[in-house]
Image 1 (tube, one colour):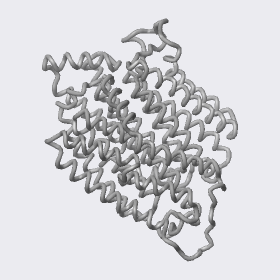
Image 2 (tube, helix red, strand yellow):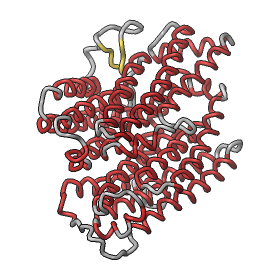
Image 3 (tube, rainbow, N blue to C red):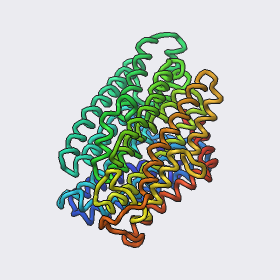
Image 4 (cartoon, helix red, strand yellow):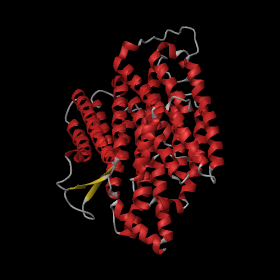
Length: 501
C-alpha cells in the first residue's frame, strides 16, 4: 500500500479483521462477555465505516487497498468507494439493531451454554458480509461466501428443534448448489482470462469480446454465475429453502438472514456485473432477460404464497421472495436507472424486513406465543410499540408515501418508463404485486387492531423492555428518513455506480 494513503483508508481492512478476530476470541468467553464484545465490535465498525464513507464522499473517488503489499496479480485487494462504504455502514447499523431487538428472546430460544456461540456466528457473518462488499478478488469472494453460508446455517439451527434442523439442512443443500455453480463460474473465468482480480478479469473480457472469441464459453460462464448467486439470494423459483429458514429460526436470526445475508450475495452480483463482466457485455448476453422474467414471477408468486399463509412469520418470509423479485426485475431491465432502483430497494428492504420480523415477535409474545392470525387479534393494543412498528413496516412494503417502499416503487416505475421494451410488463406486474402486498399486509394490520374478547393475554407497556422499544423506534425512524429524505441516498447510489467499474 502506498505510503501516501491516509490512515482512514485502512479502516475497511480493519473492519473485516476486527470481526474475524472477535469471532475467534468470543469462542473462549461466556455468553455475557461474548455479547458485550459483539456490541463493541459492531459500534466500532459503525464508526469506522462512517469515517470511510465521509472520506469517499469527500474525495468522490474509489481507491484500492493492497493486502500484504503484494501488487496484482499476485496480491489480494480491497476496492473501496462510496457505494461500498455506504452499504457497509448501513449493514453494521442494521445488524446491531437486529441483535439488540431479539436479545430478550435469545435466552428462551437458545439453550444455555450455546448463547455465546450465537455471537461468534454473528461476528463471522458480519466479517463475511463486509468482505463481500469490499473484496476485489473473486476467489476471496468465494471463500467468504462459504463462511457466510456456514454462519447462516449455524444461526438457523442453533435453536435446535426439528423444524430448524430441517430448515438448516435444506438451506445448506441449496446454498452448496449455488456456491458450487459460483465456483465453477470462477474457474471458467480464470480459464478464459488467467486472472482472479476483478479489474484484471474485466480487461481481458473486454479484449475477448472485442476480438469476438470464446463467445459460447463466456455466455455459459455468465449464466452459471448468475444462477449460482440467484439460488443463494432466493430468487424465484430457487426459494424453497427460505420460508422455514426465516420462519423457525430465532427472531434475530430471521431478521439478519432476511435483511442482510441475501443482500450480500446480490451486491456481489452487482460487482460482477460492473467490475468483472462489464455492464454492456452483461446486457448483450441476454441473461438480463432471464433475470427479468424470474424477477417478475417472484414478485407475483411470492406474494401469492404469502397470502395463503396463516403463520405471520412465514408470511413475512414469503414476502422476501417477492421483494428479491423486485431487485432482480431492476437488474433485468438492463439500464442504469433499473440498477439504481435495485440498489435503493436493497437498502429499503434491509430496513423494512428486519423491522417486520422484530416487531412480529412483540405481537406473538402477547398472543400466547402463537403465530396464527386468529390469535393475533387485538395484539396491536396489547403491545402498542410492536403494533405501530409492524404497521409502519407493512405500509412501507405496500408502497405508501412517506415510507421507504414508496421510493423504491417510484424508482422502479421511472426506470420502466425509460425502457420502452420492458415498460408494459414491468408496470403491470408492479401494480399487481402492490395490490397483492396490500392484501396480505393490510389484512394483518387490520387483524392486530381488531378488538377481541379478553383471553387473559398480557398487555405490555412500552417501558417493559426499553431496549426493544428503542430498536423499534430506530427502525421506524430509518424507514421514514428513507422515504422522506431519499434524494441524497439516490444521489450517492448514482455517484457510486458511476465509479463502480
